[in-house]
Length: 495
Image (cartoon, rainbow, N blue to C red; front, side, top):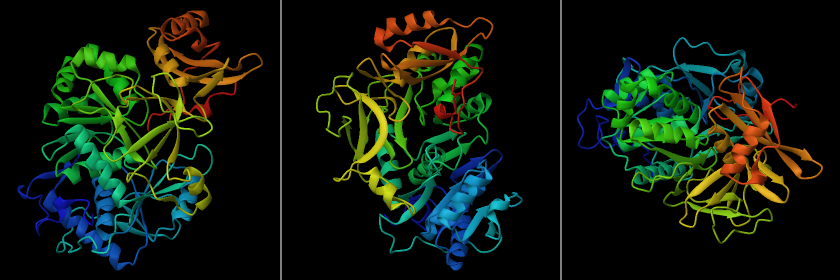
């Protein structure tokens, strides 16, 4: 467990066992590093981190080679890294820096840092050090529970909390995904995800490095870049639903994109649910299915549709190896019979979990049951054969209407199948008769001729059930989304 990256420690050249010294590891645009170059730069920086006696280091997580090298160096040094979103506001950034108390901030040369950093010591990352390569190997006393990363949650219900992610969680998640996705050193991953969160950093950068493969980061997502890289030998694509929606929209007029996607070995979507309509459009144009998986900051990955499993659009697959998953009623009683209809909260247990919220013992204790199950707050239904379908968040997406428990996600999927709907979000609001009534927030495909409320209600009722039809429809120019493309329902207008 001491080494998260066998390819950087198996021999003095920093080369994966059996691989040539020039094997590519990372590429960002025109800039790239081989495994030997990555080992040299990361070890040199790890020596500097160790020499500074740092207890934690912040990483200004721009989508660059420097961020990848900085995080790998911290992990080699056995020092937890705190990846920072460069788009964070001053207040949020100040909170994270005060809460995590890093000794250093690692950044690309020339980056301008906000005033919130104050006098914190800055270390510019040299991705090709001119001095002799560093000698840092992972400390021999690192245990599986040694903190590796402190990743801050989005803070939708208060200030962001720092989830302390141990080395075991990273290793077990990436190895479980290798099993589920048949991920090997021969795979070349392409993505354009941010590097301050689990999806882009742990799966998208550390994942290929643990396998001994390579990653090509687009810097900024675009269908042209996806086409170019998949046509140039990339085998896997990671994205969020917003990215796949743009792909689905572009496919009818872009046969080269369709051909490139058709040659990919694996297309993976995560961080939010991919609408069934987009699944179907991509499969129809490319012959490929998009694999969905389910995870969160505190748990890393919990489930996935397997590469060798049955394609089932709208589900996030089955629990990964080593992960226990159950659904529970509101009173905490486990649901024992899965019927594809009964909604319950997901709870998980396994080596993929975080250890604590930094400086928040109260929040940590509240997040777990007495017997160690983590309360995710996500609501789902489960098929008899174990496939999981997320229907929303307990706090914002579980609607209790007319005696029914209804998940917003399935209604959103149904609305998106209507030709007049470009984007959709569903919430509940108080109703004297029903308890809560279903509200649909719609971005119409044609703002000059939006579908009317009755038309949409009938559309949903015909596909799902009459009690799941929206009672109110509100129209918007766009839905509020965060950096990962998730709809921020708390930011919807109060009326």
